[in-house]
Amino acid sequence: MERLVRIARGARRARVAALGLALVVVAGEAWGQVQCGAIIGPKEKVTLQGDLEQCPPGTPALTVVGPATLDLNGFSVICREAGVNTARGIVVVGKRAVVRNGTVQHCSIGVEVLGEGSHRIENVTAALSDDGFGPLGEGFVIESDANRLTGNTAIANDGEGFRLIHADRNRLVRNHAFFNASSGFVVDVGLRNVLQGNTARDNHIFGFFLGAGPFTPGGGRNVVKNNSATGNQTGFWIDGEEGTRLTGNVADENHGDGILLVRGRKNRLTRNQANGNGENGIALLSESGTHVTRNAALNNDRDNDGNRHYDLNESLTNCGDNRWRNNVFASANQPCVR
Image (cartoon, rainbow, N blue to C red):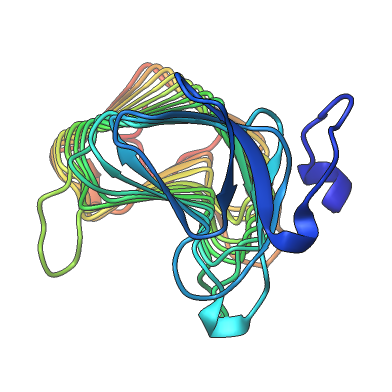
């Protein structure tokens, strides 16, 4: 597994891991050192020149205060495993910070994006996060607005790969979530977020989960476009959302449903694909005013659990006020599904 999460580093310079130090270049300054627990910024540019290892419990391994830039330069930030006291990896606060090009391992949270937002996280791998509480330990946690995460990977974390919490107008583009013990991508109450071109594979629960929140509804109008979910328990689970659009996604060979929408309204599913899933291909459960058009769902109901599932499944009698039109499928549970 360690080999899976490493970034090719080329010729390495001498390590100073035993001291928990990594050499850096700070723009406009001479060579320096940063220790575990260091605060970078505002208005600094730092480039690591070695791994930062065995970061102890307590403060985050590194804190970046925007505007500032941390270039991991292909190296790693590695926390010392300490159960419930394991440190967070990289915590981003302030506004317009940039973190890129490296790995964060064995922390309670890999990268936590806070502050005023408008941060950029690029080409960072968060792996083996574990906070000691069980089904937690996320790769990336976003709790601010208008951030952009591009080309990042969350692998083998003890919780979710990527989790947005009460966060709006974020863009997650071409990120990857593999083998996480919970879900790949989670949006817990958010408006106008864009998830585009991401991949969720072999996560234990959901590939993608978007929820408007059971006690404080308010999520919706998100865009889920051209993503892929394969080998998860459920590919896409959209819960309580309003006005969210799913377009051009692929949900193939998941163990349960490919695409499931629950308790939402006025959502749109267009040109998605859901083939070879264990249960339903595309299913609506207590949805209203939702349109399902020009999707393809074939060869589903493969789990042999004795229950009947369908390529397309509608829970409301005569489809309620949901509309199914121009879909490609072999089986459906009602004539109104077309």
